[in-house]
Amino acid sequence: MANRKVVKIVRGMPASDGAGVRLNRIMGQPALPDLDPFLLLDEFRSDRGSDYVAGFPDHPHRGFETVTYMLAGRMRHGDHMGNVGLLRPGSVQWMTAGRGIVHSEMPEQENGLLWGFQLWVNLPAKDKMSAPRYQDIDPEKIPMVTVKDGVGIRVIAGKVGEVEGPVRGVVTEPLYLDIMLPASTEFGVRVPAEHNAFVYVFEGEARVGDKPVARGELAVLNQGDLVNLVAGDEGARLILVAGRPLHEPVAKYGPFVMNTQQEIREAVADYQAGRF
Image (cartoon, rainbow, N blue to C red):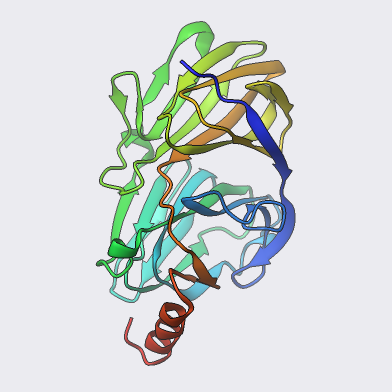
C-alpha cells in the first residue's frame, strides 16, 4: 500500500455568509480555491447567538451538492417544494441541488453552541440538471466503529472495513469519516487510491502522513491508498474526506456551479424568472 503524504496545509480565514453568520472558510478561499470534486468547506462554531442567529434565509443552488454535518446545536431546513427537516447534533444532510432549489437553513436557538461543517461537492455535467433530492441522516443511523486503542470512527459515507455509511448513491463515491483519536494513538485509514482527499483537524492536533497538523488546519493529501494518523498528547478529532475527481471545467458564480459561463447566465436567468 502507498502511504499518502501532505502536499499542502491551509488555515481557514474568517468569513460571513447568509444573513451575517460568522464562520471559518477553509476551502473556497484564495489559499485553497477547491480540490476536485470539493468546492468549499466552512466550519461554523460559536456560542454567541449574535454570530449565527440570523441564519441562512432563502437562497438558491444549482449544479452541486451541499453536505451539512452538525456537531452541536440545531438547524431547521426548508425549501420551496415544502420539504422540511431538523439538523441536530450528530446528524447529516446530503442535499443534491441538481437543476435548482431555493432553501433556507435557520438556527433553532438564540444562544448556546452552534457547531458544524458545510461541504460543497461538485456534480458532473451529466447530473447538473438532475432532480433535487435529500438524504437526511439522523445521528442514530450513522455507525460508530471502534478499532484498536479506542480509536472511534463515525462512518458518514464510504466504508471502514465492512461497515458502510448511510449516505448512498453519490456519483463522486465519497468517503466522509469523523475520526476520534485518543492521546498518542496511531491508526491507518484505507482510502480509494484514485480519490482526492483531505484531513481537517477540529480538536487537538495530529500527525497526518508526514506532517503535524494543528486544530483549524486542513491537510491536502497526495495520491495513495493509506492515510496514517497519529494523535498528539491530548488526542485529536478530525474529518477525513475523499472523493473521485471529475476532471471537468468549473464555472462558479455565488450559489451556482456549472461547466461554462453560458450555463451560469442561464442559471441566473432561470432563478430570476422563478423557474427553480
